[in-house]
Every structure is written in structure tokens, then in C-alpha cells.
Image (cartoon, rainbow, N blue to C red; front, side, top):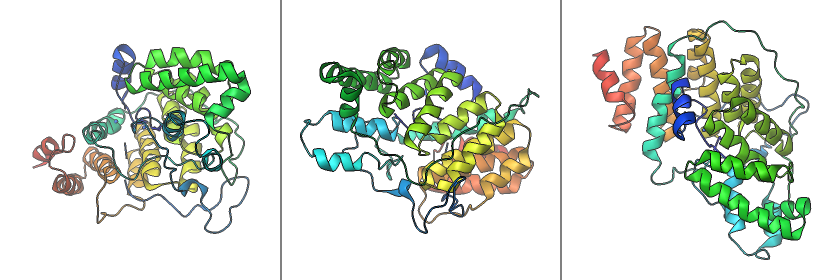
Amino acid sequence: MTGVVPVASSPMASPQDRRSSRQGGGSRGSNGRSGGGSGDNRGQRRQGGGRSKGQNPDRRRRPPDDAGPRNWGGVARRAAGRLEREEAEDRDWRREQTAERTTRPNRTPEGHSDRLRREAVDAVARGVRPAKPARVHRALEREPLPDVPKRHPDVEVALRRAMGDSAGSRASAKLREAARAFDDERFNDARRILNSLVENAPEVVEVVELLGLAHYRIGNWKAAAKRLEVFRNLTGGTEQHPVLADCYRAQSRWADVDVLWTELRDASPSAALVTEGRLVAAGALADQGRMADAVRVLERGWSVPKRARDHHLRRAYALADLYERSGAAPRARELFRWIASRSTDFADVPERLRSLN
């Protein structure tokens, strides 16, 4: 999305940022990609089937073969780590881990905090002006998510099954090349490589996910949504829901944003990921001029954490922005001051505080 994945680019980028990304290679916007607070855990059932008490498959521990930067998605990061190891090493253990799909590391990798802070500004930019009335789109018909994420073979095994041993090995090398291009923000190069792979491996989740995120970073919202819908169906998980929802947000497909937010909220995979989805949902409401509803989405379940992490600060920033725009200056000032007490140079908080004093 998120972030491939992953959060690849922010699900909360502004239209201006997206246009800049399309013209020059762009930066995230995974969310301004956005982010805090704990996820809503009250939804213990998904549409189409129940889940046994306490079962939460998306909360499982990240396998140790995670590799690659945070702005890749969980699947791509794990694939990168596996592709760098010998084929025979820990084969049985790794196959058991392929279905364990989480989304974000618990700690922000070094060097990314500044980017995350910039994203907080981008995350609220789209709602400054309500969207113009547009044709009402019905939500797409989707199969309900399964109770447990689907199992898939190791990426090398999947590529060899789809393309044969020799071609599959070459495809693995190309996938690594595409991942490097994506990491370098050469998104068109990554897309070109992945387009050649997806034709022969349309159900290899790592290929589909990274291609969807490459389209997202370029600003090809429809193409990105198409691939990430396939990713959702292949994995049965919610890992890229914030990115997918933001693709629909960019197209003013509000019903699809609502459906994906509900799925993510009910699955409640992690606080950071749920926060990204929450920011997209609130941003979509702000885009429609529904400021009170947007505030309620961000306020629900919010409390000042004892230990503030990036996703807490990003959620607080978005909520403070909505307070200010809604005329609740004292509340906005209080939240901006709290953010400043945790991070003296977070986004444009110092300037926002000066304007409120």
C-alpha cells in the first residue's frame, strides 16, 4: 500500500501531489499515504461468514525473511527476502509462512520518519475543497472475504508452476528488477517489467500486488484498482485496502470506499493499517463536504496514547486539521500542541500553531 506493497504510495495523496507524481515520478501520497490509534475491534464478523472468538489471522507474526523498504507492500517485502536466499534453505518452514500476511513493521525503518511527516500534510490536502457533484456510482459486487487468508506457494514456486523452471527463474530475476525500480521511484520502469510478467503469471500475488502499486504511484487509478481488486480476491486479505480505497476515492466512487473501509475495520489487522484506512474514509467524507461525518470517523475510538507512534501523530494531525476547518479552533490548537510536544518539527505543525494563536 499500502505499502509491494504497501504501502506503496500514500492512500491519502492530494490531486496536486498525484499530478506531480504522474509528471515527475512522484512521491507517496500508503496515505500524504496517512495514519494512528488502535483499530476498531468491535467487528468480529465479516459479511458472508463468522470468525471464531479471538481468531484474527491478519495479526500473525511477520516472518523473519522480511526485506525491502517500508513503501513496498508486505508481500513484496517478503518476496524480496525469499528471493535472495537459496531455493532449498528453510523450504518447509517458508511454505508454512506464505499465508501469514501482515502489513507494516512495528517500528518505522530508519530514514522514513521525515517522509511520513510530509505525508501527514498530504493526507489532509484533498479535503480542502469539497468535490464537485458527480455521477453516483454503485459499489462493485465482490465476493465476501474468507475467514482466513488464502494460502499461496512461495513466489519462486508460483512462477515456476506458471511458466516452467527456466522461464520461472528468469521471471524471478525480473521481479527483483521491478522491485528495485519501484524502490528507486522509477514506477514506469517497474510497470513495464511487471506487465511482461503478469501476462504469463496472472495469479502470482507478488506480481499482481506490485503492478497495482506501480499504477497507483503513477496515478493510473483505474488500472491500479483493477490489479488490487485481483490481489484482494487472490489473498482474501485486507493488506492493500487503504490503497485500493484511495484509488476509488480519486474517482469519486464513494460507495466502494465505504465497503472497503468496513471490510478493513471489521478485520482490524493492525492499528497502523486500520488508521490508514480510517484516514482515507474520513478524507472521502471531507471530499464530499461532509465535515461533521469526517470528524466523527477520526474521533471514534481516539485517545491520546501513552507512547505516540507515527500513525498516532498522522491521525491526530488529520483530526486537528478537520477541527480547524470546522471552526473548532481550541480543539485544533490542543491537538497541534500535543503533536508538537511529541515531535517538534512534525509536518507544518509549528506554522499551524502560530496561525491559531
